[in-house]
Length: 340
Figure 1 (cartoon, helix red, strand yellow):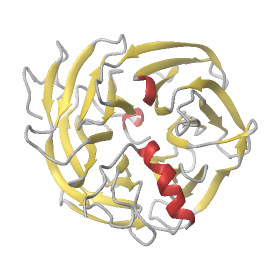
Figure 2 (cartoon, helix red, strand yellow; figure 1 turned 90 degrees about the vertical axis):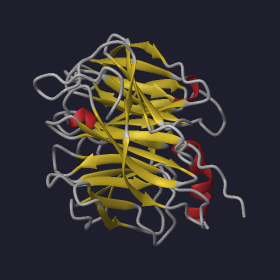
Figure 3 (cartoon, one colour; figure 1 turned 60 degrees about the vertical axis):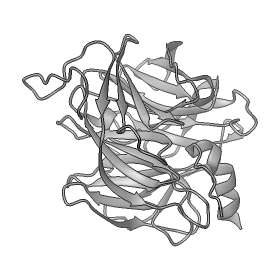
Figure 4 (spheres, helix red, strand yellow; figure 1 turned 90 degrees about the horizontal axis):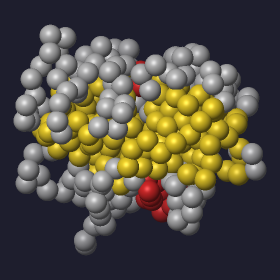
């Protein structure tokens, strides 16, 4: 039987929700601190670390997302389309190239993972059910952190960014299935008691990450291939919003975002096993690519850069399965480049 081509986290989840209810490139000179020097747009070649998942017969796809390092240096990864009983959250030892199940359940369709700086728990977005849940770092103690409507509408939460106090900023991709610009950015207090819409009328809000100084948020819009910037007021509000970068993705679309210590943006591409790297002024610095002639890998969804280091791990998926690839980032990893 011919398998369906795995599709983007968000677009795939309409079907998943139904099921749930029934570094070698050109000019890559290293600086003294180990970072790769910036320059003209060039290719950063990613290398395969390991295969984590195969296409699931039950869902016809696999889709890895949300890589985030825990305090022990393990990489936590979610499989968005994993069926009930199969690992939905995995813990990966990237040094030993081994993985094991951290969590599974019969319901969730988790699109991102991020550790809270407030309580240290692992937070997951359940796109299909409009919820945010949390786990203890060892995978135990599942809790529902937030559920229900926000200002009269149910969320489709995709990615998360935490501020330094532990409040959540969520990309809400409402309107994707209708092709309508109904996406939002939602702020949720760290205790889950208050949710506020910070921006709306966005086109399938997807990636979300603070800039290097925590002054604003970078937001990717999947169906318009653009990155917007929200300037924050420091008190939970937005002072301005503008289109910052228009991504020339061709057939590919803008997925998740990570930001390194120098403020560079790593824009994942759905529909191409690659990432586009920009500086904070919108200059294209590099393109991260898997090796040529690699077949069956169709999307690079997200990346985690080792905190305090430059080794980056990219989640890549397609009809060949779900994989981890690694490359050398342009600068060191921080919280903004670790999960989301």
